Image 1 (cartoon, rainbow, N blue to C red):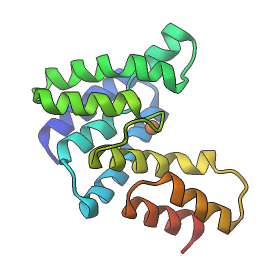
Image 2: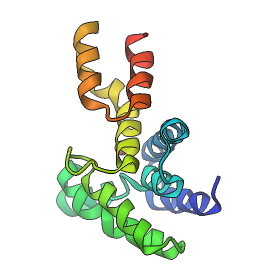
Image 3: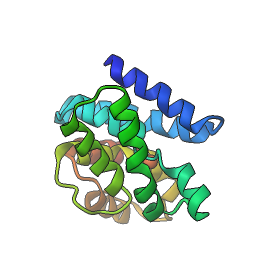
Image 4: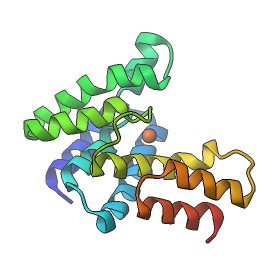
Length: 164
Ligand SMILES: [Fe+2]
């Protein structure tokens, strides 16, 4: 793995502290993001940095706004991600790209880069079991088709959640 990504993982662990659930979530998203990227392509550093840092504002959101709702994370996350990325020497273009993903990944806005789509799908693969409503196979397939943005994300979701 890129040594910068290893540093970002350390930073993420330090920021989340004892919050193992969030650390595990970020690492699980990183795992799926790497898998999707290995097929779909995309800038590895942007994708991996976005995976590690995508929920990095969640504690600030809870402390400042008393809520981990997506819109508060989208306010609090980017400045933290920017600080961490700059500290680790990531170039400005990638910082802007990663911060845009961090800022928008709770809504369906502006998912217009491959890197954003890969992160989006990886996050959904991890979150799906928690958000999964009682749906029959056909409904599930339709939802998966609608939500996932990449072929690899869609295929992985079908394999994991529909068994096909
Ligand atoms: Fe997430």
